[in-house]
Image: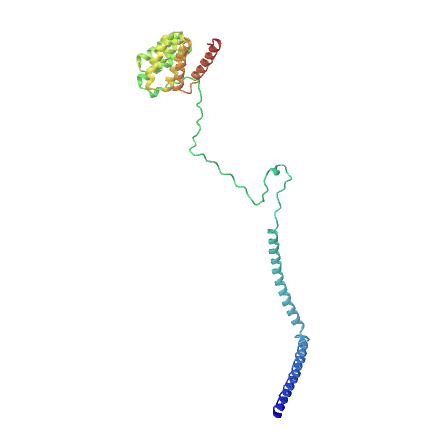
Length: 282
């Protein structure tokens, strides 16, 4: 029992001694570390070094060159930052100080209004202009386009038209009849004989010649057929046969819509009919 107690006391003492030694060692280490750090903070790496003037100027020039190289980079960076600031600057709204600007929507300057699309009408038919009306009588055909005997007959026709314009009815009738003897199937002799008879007041004779001219012209010129129908309408109107006159004028416009004299005659007849109905109501 005494031995056991002795061993316990010895182990406790050894433990206490070890703890004391450890505490002393740790205190020494802390002091050593603190002294080392203070020496390191007071250490100057360039202390004790001496430089000649040439070495100082060379070293200073090198440092200055490095500073100059770094400055442009800083300036370029500043320019890029300024450009970004300008791009990010907000766009001011449109000035509404003018009167017309109040009626337009607000938009930015860089925006462009697109032109409206052109409307396309499918299957659009072109509008035809009305024909030009003319009061001039139709012209005779060119002599060189006719056979020789019809050329000679046309020569007499032209001579008779000139005599008719001078009111020389005898000479005009002689020339027109001579033309029909040379070319009986040429319609112009019949037409101008009917015109001559109408100028003389011979209405029935004029209608006979004008019908013959219309028969011969049935295979030919529409313009001359329309003119012959118009002249028949004038004969009927002078005879106070307004129904047949109206029909003849309408036929003339169907054949030649540009015949101004036929259109004027129809309008005149329509006005006379309205006046008659107003004067004699049923």
